[in-house]
Image (cartoon, rainbow, N blue to C red; front, side, top):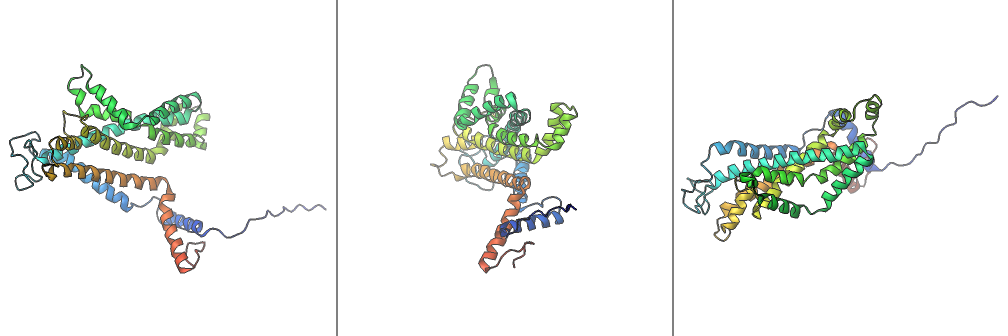
Length: 339
């Protein structure tokens, strides 16, 4: 009689790396404790910084004097009448800081949203459709990537601002935001293209396509909802790029002149020789606020990256367990405990 028993499949045995075991243990415990990642210190700190600065830019302009009022004494240091002193032309620095924060936030949000829209258009469509569409859109994206960003922004801004017929719009914050938006989308498009190309091969997307769903509906219903954390990270990156780009353009004299931003404040301080006059209260507050806003947005971006990629959240704890075990001459067991 023939032996119908199923032969045993040899199982590979051997020690599992302790760092991998610790990571697995942390991941299991993390899923048992909570379905969603907890709010990290980075995320909480970043949100507090950004919210405070945003509220200052939104509400403070209603409670300060006209930022263009020049009836004050020139170069007054911070005191009772003026919290942050005055400029060379008698402008109140605190009032300009309030309006400048609002202007910079406006440029950042508009440029970031526009850059994200273009990144979705070029990245997600290229990753989903593939073929000729992918090659054409990827070619355009690569062209934008190889062109130096700051010189391109400078050339476009200088050309547009000197174009006749635009009137006040030629040196407005909105125009600067548009210029920054159409030049800052390429990096995000590359990231979105790679992710959309991966999602395109998922079973639920294939099922929708087999069911006869239209491509745009598949993109908006199946692809984009799974890209929300990544889209949020790219939006924040675009806002940071726009705020810093506007500050750089304004410092070079290519920023908006019809409105006040943190960058135009730095330009006024530079042209007014604030450093030579030792008027530190003129240039330090806008520079510090730009740095603080960039720090807050970056912390939020890092926290979102940890949510999108759990390895970034779990690896530090696993590494700490491994280092502790190495110092004590022990090993990390399968459940993550130090033996």
